[in-house]
Length: 462
Image (cartoon, rainbow, N blue to C red; front, side, top):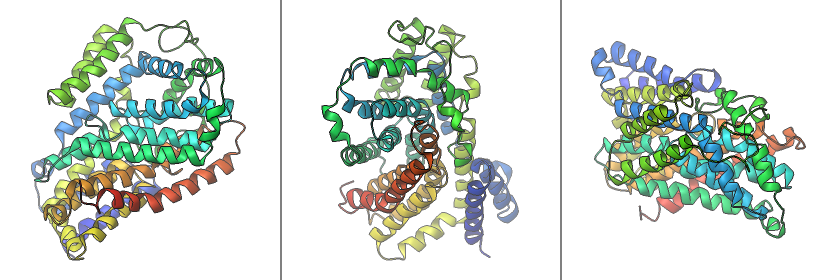
């Protein structure tokens, strides 16, 4: 059996084991890299580790450490309260506020499941109080998380752009980010219209919206305590229903749970300034995101030592292991000739557009049950040689693959979909709600990749 064929079998076994067993895909990938590299290919340990993504390791550690401190000192809750106040009496704006907040949280570096774990309980409590379709509200939160997920400083964005940067392909981080943002925004508009959002336009309420947000703010703390945030993106890490239960006690902002009396403290103001500085310095001055984020995190830890307590433990170590393991394994795949083997097979189809569509569907179907990050880390390198031929727009294919592999996180078998299901309002039939989410995710898996392909690949404008 040839090395490329054997490596593909190993990769398939890895995905199967990570799907049916509570195993981290990254740990399996390191084992696969070791066995394939040393036993089959005769590579030395240093050669195997040459593909270890040190820069990406620092970036993920830095941004998740920074975000953990921002959670601990109450800055995220403060921003949520501020955004909800903007709603006023307009109930129809609540779903859009939740979409926007979740998008911002992921855009500044939080993992998608972390953002959903924070916002979904609050959003679904609003849905119950103001008779908003819970399916619409939950999916708006997830699509919001994916809308911001490919910003140049987000984990998805850093992963994809880092892979492309090592190739000779034209990189366009902003194009990929905007493609994902606009695509998810378009889905949100359709959801809003189809699931009764237009009926909310005539609905008004007083201060109930603000009061509900402030009284439920402790939910995000409960979600974090349940281990929902900054954890592995795999389905096996789905928290139990306790993630949606309300906790009691003081607000993490350092004040009472009544947000009307809480004001931003020095640590929170410094955190907001730090998040702005991260975007300006890393994007405007092209300074390494990892070094900038971890520097800002240390500054925040010095300003408020109590807020950084436990933040190290909230770093997404499982995701670090996942991505670093997968990219190390991909390096061994390249040494084995697997990437060229697969790309040649795709190229021999003689139909580049069909090949691109096939790749998008593979990413979508597998990602609906497994980690989107792992899928992106595996499929993009396999597509690089095929894209390097220039027969089809590389940026368009990568953007379509990125969108197709992440919009399916609405699946109840993924962490995001499961979080929404777990935090369903008490008056909602959980079994019926599960079937609704399952049906919606089936539509997304079936139609999403094709639409992304039609919009981003076929016209050839990207």
